Amino acid sequence: MGKIIAITNQKGGVGKTTTAVNLAAAVGAKNKKVLLIDMDPQGNTTSGVGIDKRNVKASIYGVIEKRTKMEDAIIKTPFKNLSVIPSSVSLSGAELELVNVKNREYLLKDAIAPIAKDFDYIFFDCPPSLGIITTNVLSACDSVIVPIQCEFYALEGLSQLIGTVRRIKRQYNNNLELEGVLLTMYDKRLKLTLQVLEEVKKYFQDQVFKTVIPRTVRLSEAPSFGKPVMYFDKFCKGARSYNDLAKELIKNNKK
Image 1 (tube, rainbow, N blue to C red):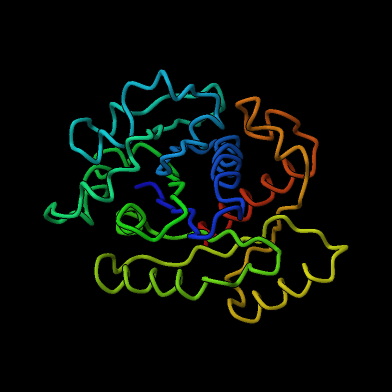
Image 2: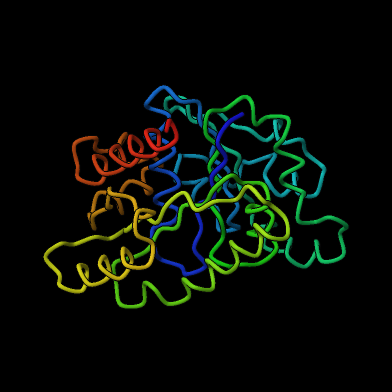
């Protein structure tokens, strides 16, 4: 069975989608078969791998509505070992549509079961909220990666997120674990960055990834070309950092 990992933080602008796209691509480049599932109605992960959202026929929304099998929504990308299930703007209405659905917390878990064995890693890019969509993802996952921006408000709301993860673990998914906390937009020249790093390590200790993701223009530019950064500029700092993160993740899961 593949390792299923949610990339989530209810705070926006922390590098969540950037991490989802670039980590998935970097893991795929290491001869691991990877599926990336876009759970955000904005569809930035979908466009970040070069898929035109306007031409998508089958999406994760159809899977949640049980109109589409998950295997029928998979799109192979031109990037090594990387497949994607795209999102749809219709997903924004799912929170209300699922209110009265029986066992709604397990829709994704049931849908992903038939394909989990076909991939080494499955990554979910979650929306910036802690609603029913994120609950569904966490109920289906083995672990969670939490990106944290190296800025003043980084730790704000983090206790709420960890509380949600613990609640999901208690109520819906006994196997859910914290894969790690990832520091993004890192700039070692700034005193504030070092203070945030110190606070995060104090709280999470060895659950913080050793790899940090720097603030770099190339990471911001790559999505407009529909490419993960390693296929846009493989020698830039951002590409090297996500390559290091992929190695760290794979090594941790071999232990």
